[in-house]
Image (cartoon, rainbow, N blue to C red; front, side):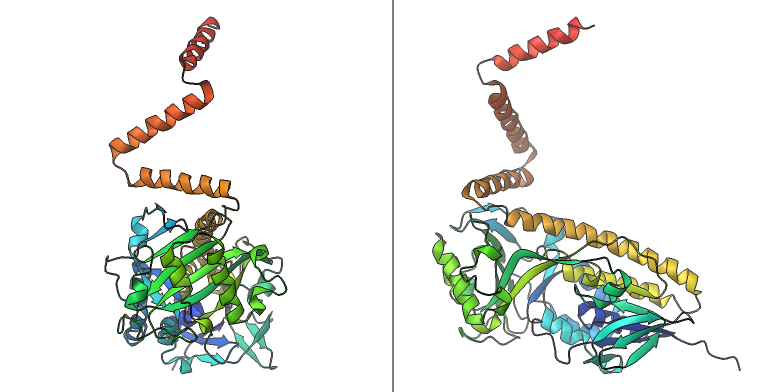
Length: 460
C-alpha cells in the first residue's frame, strides 16, 4: 500500500477576522493541516463595533464557508434599512446637507456586527484554534520547513506561515524588516448610542452622515440594527449590551485639538473621552438633533483609536511566508474597506493554499506571488480611496478651507446627480465664470482671442 502524502502544514498567526476566516476555509480542505494561533485568550474587547461589507463579500462568505458556519455568521448582518440600502451624506454641523451622491457600489452593502461575525467564525474552532499563544518570530529550517516561535518557549514547525496579526505584525517584521508603522496625528473616538425609536428620529440623515466642522474636526454617524430586535429597550448612559442595536458615533480630530493635552487619548478614561466629545459639539453651533445624539453616548462603549499607518511594501517572493489583511498594510478608517479587503485576502489565499498538495515548493512560490500581487493591488486601490475621503474630512482646518471644501463638494454633488441638460448649464456657468475671472466681462475676451488669432496667422 502506497504511503499517504504528508499534509501541507499551515500556521496562521492572528485570530482576527482574516485569521479566523482562513481557519474555517482551510480546516476541512483535503491535504491541508491548518492551525490558527491567537495571542489573547479572550475575545477582542473592541469586537462590538460595526463594519460595512458589500453584498458581494457576503455572498463570497456564503459560497465558501461550511453551511453550518455561514448559519452562525448570518445573524451578524443588520436589519435592512427602510430605504432598502444604507445612504449617508456629508453635512455641516448646522444640519445643511451638501453631498448626497451615492454610487451603486455603496448601495449594495450591509452593516455587520463585528462581535457576531467573530462569534460565527469561532464556530467549532476548538479543532484548529489555540489562544494565549504570543508569536515572537520564525526561523527557516534547512529542510525547507519553517518554525514559528512563541513567547512561552514553545514552537510549531510547518510548511507555510501566514501573518494575520494586524498592523503591528511580528510576521511582517521578520519578512519585511524595513517596513515601518507610523503614528499619525489623527484620532477617532468611538461611542455607541442605543438605537431606540427616539434616537432614530435624531439621526440627521437617513442611515448616517459625516458632519464636517470648520476646524478640521468631524463626526461620523452610522447604524447597526439587530435583525432579531431592531430597537433597543431603553437608554442607559453608562452601559450598553454588545447585542443591542446602536448608532455608532465617531469623533475625528487631530491630537492638538484635544482640550486635555496632559495624556494620550489612549490613556484617557471613558468619562474623560465622553466629556471631550460633548465639549466639542458645545463649542460650535451644532444642530439640536446632533447635539442630542452626542449627549446620549454610552460611557462604557468608549474607544480611542490613535490612527497608525503601515508603509506600503513592494511585492515579495517566498514559498513559505505570506501576509493577509492589515499585516500587509492598512488603510484609513473611512469607506469601511479594511475588513472587506481582509476577507477577500483570506478567501483568495485559501484558494491558493488548497492547490498546494502535490505542488513543488518552487511552484508554490509563484502561486503565492500571484496572490500577493492581486491582494496588494486591491489593498492599494482601497487605501488611496479611503485616504482621499479622510483627507477631505480633515481638510477644513480653517473656515476658508472648510468653505472651499463644502461648496466644492456641493457643486460636485449637483453635477453627479443632475441630468444632462443641467450638467450643460453648469458647464456653461463654470466656463463663463472662468472667462469672467481671467479676462473680464466687457468684451476683452473676444478682443484677446482676435489678437491671438492674428498672431497665429501672421506666423504662417
